Image (cartoon, rainbow, N blue to C red):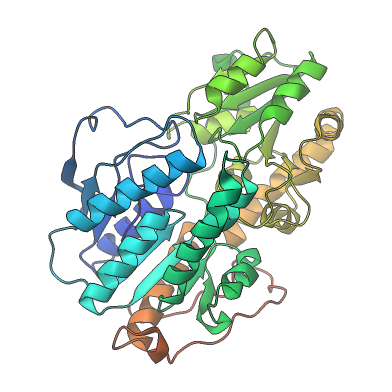
Length: 436
C-alpha cells in the first residue's frame, strides 16, 4: 500500500489506511508493506519522535511501514502543495521499500505523488494497481480556495487522469465521484464504490459527566466542529455564528493550517473555544457531549471530497448540521443517513436558525441524532467496509492475471440504484472464500 497518511495519525484517511493494512495482516492472508510519509496530519507539523528523520522503517501491528521524509507546509498555497507532493514523489522514487515483489499495489489518494508511486511500483513488478480515491485532487485544487489553485487544477487533473487510467480497478468512496472519474477516461466498468466506514466506537461516558469535564454548563447550547481546520472547510461561518449569537457556545476541536487564522478572526469572542484533538479513547464521548455537530464546506466544494468526520459524527448519536452545497456528496450522505439537516454553505444565519431549532425542539434533535448509530450499524460497519476493500483487491488479483488494465475480465458495471434495507452503502459486499 502507498499512503502518505498512516498511523499514528488519527484524522483524515490515516485511520482507514491503517485499518485496511492491519485487517489484511490479521486475516493471515498477506504480508503487508506500506510506503508512507512522516506523521504530520492534521496539524501539518511532523510528529514528535519523527522530526529530523530521513527514513524510518518500523513494524506496527504486524504491518511493515517504510517512511520517507517530505516537506510539510505550514500554510497551504499551490506552490507549497506542489513542493510537498514533489518531495514525496522524489524520495519514494529514490528510496523505494526494500521488499520482495508484491502481488498487488493499492494506493490511497488524495496524494498525487502516492498515486504515481503506486503506479510506478505496480508497473515495475507487473502486478495489479488499485487506487482508492478518497479526494479528487484536480477538483480540490479548483474548489478548495487554495491560493493559486486555479492554475494548479489543470496540472493536477492531468496527473490524476493518467494514473487512474493505468489502474486495474479504481475504488471511489462515494458514487458522486463516479462521473468525474469516468470523465478522466476510466471506463465505468472498472470503477467500484467502496465507501468509508465508521472507525470509532460509540460513546461510553455519560453526557453530563463529559460536559462537566469539558466545562460546558447545562442549558447552554454547544455547537462542535471536529477535524481538520483547512481552507476547504470554510470554518469562518462558525466563527461568524459565534459572533452573532453570544448565547451559543461554538467549539472547534482539532488542528490544521487555518487554526491560527481562525483564532485571530475570533479573538475576543468569549463563546468561541479551540480544543486540541481528543484522544481516541474519549473522542466520541466528546462528540456526544455536544448538542449539535457541525460539518462545513466552502460553497465551491461539490464533488472533490466527502468528509470522513461524518462517519464519526453519526456514531456519536448527536444531530448534525451540514453547511454545505446541496449538490455535493456531503449533502447526499446527510440525506441518506437522515441524521441531521443541511443548510446553504457560508451562511451563518441559516446555520444559526437550524441550530436554534434543534436546541429548542429536543425531541427533534434526539430523533435525528438517533438515526446516526442506526445508519452506522446498517451501512458503515468496519466489517462491511473492510470487506468491500478486500473484495476490490481480490477482484483485481483474480481478473488481471498479467497486470494490464485491458485484461480485466470480471468487471460488472457500476450500478446506481436504491439500496435494499440493510444493504451497505456502495452495494452488497461480495463474498469470497479468501475473505470469508
